[in-house]
Image (tube, rainbow, N blue to C red; front, top):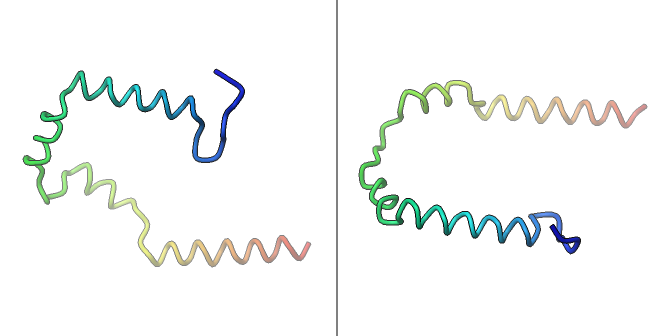
Length: 79
């Protein structure tokens, strides 16, 4: 790996590696086959999706967490 990396959203070497891997994947698996899978998609949630959503935060929990973080930051600044 070179030393001319641009950090932040990524670097040139990682972007090149990603592009190469994506092209390899499409060649191996075929774009038409992947695109065809969407036709079989369902609006119904799978059991795994329902299980995952059951653990997700709702808006009220997000607000509560944000308020708690604000209080902790203010308390820390008072030190």
